[in-house]
Image (cartoon, rainbow, N blue to C red; front, top):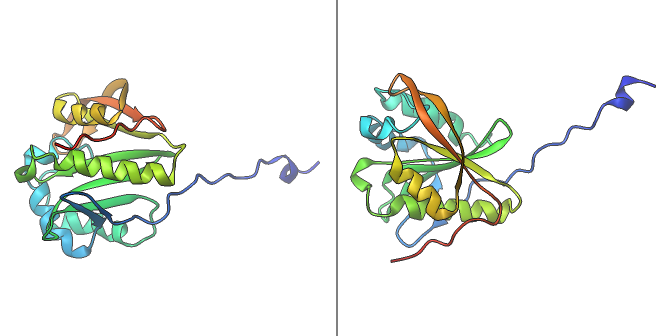
Amino acid sequence: MSTTALQRPETKPMMPGPAPVISTTRLTLRPHRLSDAPAIAESLSDFAVTRMLSRVPAPYDRQDALDWLIPVTSGTLPDWPLAITGADDVHIGNVSIELRHGRWHLGYWLNRYYWRRGYMSEAVAAIIERFSRRMPETPVYSGVFADNPASLRLQEKLGFRMTGCGEIYCFARNTMVSHIETVLQPGALQPRKVA
């Protein structure tokens, strides 16, 4: 018997298809453009934002934004990195679902001047709802730094549950940081309450 006959066929994970444009009550979530680089650099040059993100360096500048945008806008990645924009199409943040190590992961950030308005809850609920329609049997993983209770509350309100704690390296802080891991199981998305 040959070794070819004994090998299992490769199974490719299901993919959700191209990133959509999603409209909510106040926001539009759309694929990023290279022209978003200045707005991204402005938002992520704020340490109050980057300190809560594991993979974003500080300081952060326009070239960092372009280095991230080039593969993101190429259309070759299976991920859904969406720009959060208002009615005027100004880039105010990012919400994404990325395939990492065989699992789909939620990540997000928002320019500090738009905090405490419910925009992030609106954006995260919208992307998760759309992703769940395309990938109904797929859990979505995420996590927050332990010193970010607002982000943990956002996830818990949407149905994410804690699965563990650990430490991960934060580039902006240049140190290991306590991290709470979360997961949203298929069918567990809680409807967002509109005020």
